[in-house]
Image 1: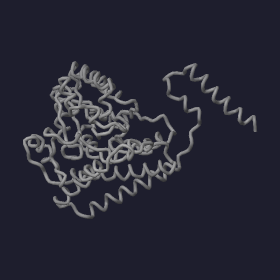
Image 2: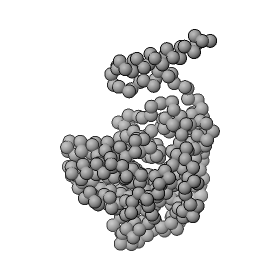
Image 3: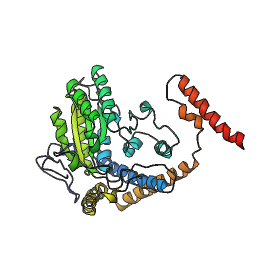
Length: 371
């Protein structure tokens, strides 16, 4: 399942602006962007890909237990995240690494989770309202909808003050749309007219199950079925991701109810490093999407606008520096005490946790006694 007649595209695969009936309403969002702002889009995408590659290398070398790559999905994530305002609350799944970094999460915090050194997580209040990674497929849509319901009831949207009004945006994948949680979330969002944007990253594969097997119709029509205005975009077009998301977040903040965006993109690598996509994917499909790479496309656009070679060289250096930094820091991380397994399970002391902590301590002590 690829682009359809409904797909909104502002930047062609050849790196030129698209003028069409579908794009005209969104181009004003792009026209107001300065060269510096556009170059910031590219910086996030390029540096994130270098981080992603280094993290995958670390996993292959035994330094991470698992890695979830986002190679190929940079435009969908960067464009949508830059469209959000600081007061907006973003609910990720577990692949939105660049958005985490953009919202102030230390990359080592992410890597330590995949190394198995922490329960994971951070305080959203300290990271520009970026909420926690969610591994239970689709459940974050309910978390986001519940939060958006609370924001609506608290009068934090639709006040007429765009500097204070806030919205929620939740990220999820095509496989999640087959989960009941997502449908339930949309039922409540539509019923309560929540200030919310559902941002679906359709990367075409729910591990080894293609979208064509999950749905006989484009996934953006799911939102329409719940009475939620929905749009399908070229998710490898960072300008479309930004402009369409900005327009829909503005509407949600203004009290016009929820919105649904399906971003057509592609997972260039494995679902996770425990997966082997060569077992189920065709090389011709991979080549089709490689020709629509979001970074290559945007670089062509920036060069046509006059971006210098030194700018691209600086980005390559910045990416390499980040890769070297995370490699150094991950290797320096200490192994936490096993007792930390029981921390933060409950907010207050709990007798079951106390008993389990003691049982583990006794078990480890038995080895010392044997020596």
